[in-house]
Length: 139
Image (cartoon, rainbow, N blue to C red):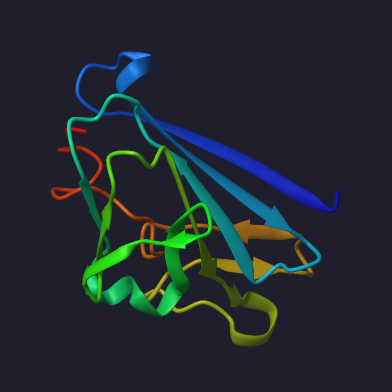
């Protein structure tokens, strides 16, 4: 298999599909140390949305999150404003080469193993979330 695809739906507020935010992660063996992330945001949001990562996650972020071809406006080095008109944002994550670097239990960030043919994605990666994290979000 040359690529893997995963989607994680997190329902913000009520669990209604109109308020569901869906994360899509694309993994490709041709570029195994990079995970492409796309988030479909709920339609009909009342205004801009702030998405952020913890400062410890900044090392796994490749480039700047964007809405289409337009980079999001940075509020801080770890938070961005998503305009109300934006329905999909995307960014990339850097993964560790497990076969070369191994894993550190104190820093279990994402990894790829060519020998084992697996990826590991953890919450230590730069998955953007609303203030309060995914559990407390209201979009």
